[in-house]
Image 1 (cartoon, rainbow, N blue to C red):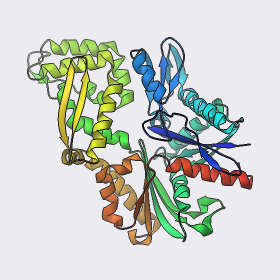
Image 2 (image 1 turned 120 degrees about the vertical axis):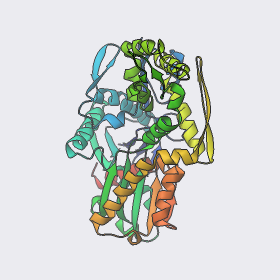
Image 3 (image 1 turned 90 degrees about the vertical axis):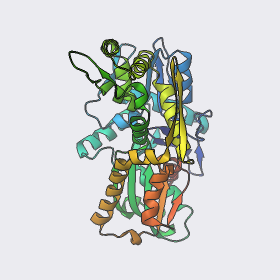
Image 4 (image 1 turned 120 degrees about the horizontal axis):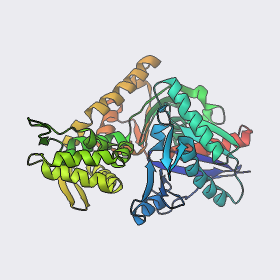
Length: 424
């Protein structure tokens, strides 16, 4: 019986099936912008039904945003305070929501395999969270979600190990490799022995060191928004709530930097009432920005907004500057953002990633020169300042490829080996 391998990512997900003879990609979302993946998003219209992946994005627009749009669920798995959310008036646990997405993947995998699939190998970050209690909570929620989705046998593998398994197939000699998987929500780093002599066994023994940090592409997006875009929404505006002029509170501005914060800010009528009160006394030139912020929240323009942010960030990966273009209702923003200013805004993120890598090497008793190869994968690895961080330490030893599907392919390789060995 075939098995399934799923790389459930913060931003994108890939799915594979494996049997004793081969592994195959499941094109669960042929219309996805990123080949062989599906956006990790879901939409529940207020009427009925559910949509996942690219169809969710299109349905969100077709239904005029009348429903619940959900993304970046993986980031909330380790949060003990994020237990339930409301969909069509019902309070539902996070594992139920993840399960609906996994069921969509399972149905596609079974259609590809031509038979029922009961077993799944799921990827997981080296660390969902720095605290073990929260890390364990995240994996338990994924286990419960997979069970709800209909899988009877569920196993996990670290995502950087999976990424290494895909890369390892190209090696002719044994090496000590630093594997870096920089995704939408987390960045994982593993020093691992790879090569032909290592194939076939339990790979955990080949891991020399492994760590991770809860920083990913979403955090880089937030920095771009915070330092390059919020000024268009009256971020520095002043108003007169009493006898003197004071800055407008910025908590609603900051809700624009994260999807889950934006959803709750937009759905709270008291926030609109507050902005109405601000507009009565706000000073120029901040009036238009505050009016745009009110319109933004009233009409829940978040989906199109984050798409524009992503487009701008992608442009900055290949150009010294990019134009942020966003039009919705009366809002019209066309502003040039330089790569230099973007890189200044993410300096803190880069420092944390750098410190995490340095600490791993120190704790393992290794020098940078001890690894012969550095394998980079994950969409965030394509940001120039992130790539430069690794080039400064490991010049001439870096291999980067398959940014979005290396983990899924590696999971499929391991799933097939475990199936043959009777370990799945």
